[in-house]
Image (cartoon, rainbow, N blue to C red; front, side):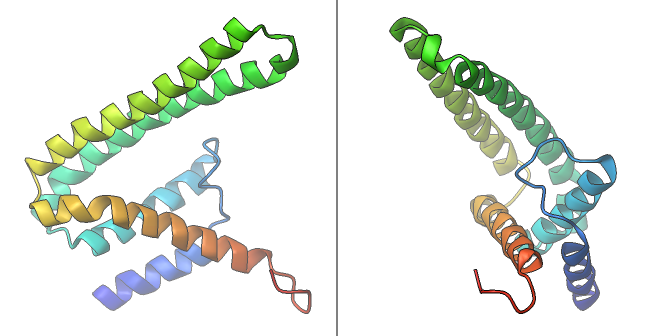
Amino acid sequence: MKKLLILTAAVLLNSVHLAYAQDELEPSKREKLEALKVAYLTKELNLSPEEAQQFWPLYNELEDRTRAIRKNRRENRLDTKANHASLSDAELSAAVDRELAFEQQELDLKKEYTERFKKILPMIKVAKLHTAEQGFRKELLHKAKDRTKIPGGPPH
């Protein structure tokens, strides 16, 4: 079963075009990416079926809320970037303060959900979550880099 899960994840990783950094994915690509993430995190955290049943709705809620914060953050950055040269020091200071507020919102959200995860998972699995998420992103970036290499071209 584990080999099948790993094989499925590897095949899907090879077929998904890296767009993890982009929030606006085609629905089919987002679904594939989310399926890969579910498989990866389930394996890395060694979630039991009971744990997974409680974990995934909570994790998806966290992801939705994080995505909303990041969308607002991007819009703030675009507004500031577009008008950068014409903004006063006070306006630029306010933009920097808003950026820090977005970072704080994300941190507060992580803290809130970490406490909620502690109620449904053993502490070892809560502790592994952040590392597993980083491992998933790293693996996706590695696969994307491999796909962008041109055969016979210079190595990256």
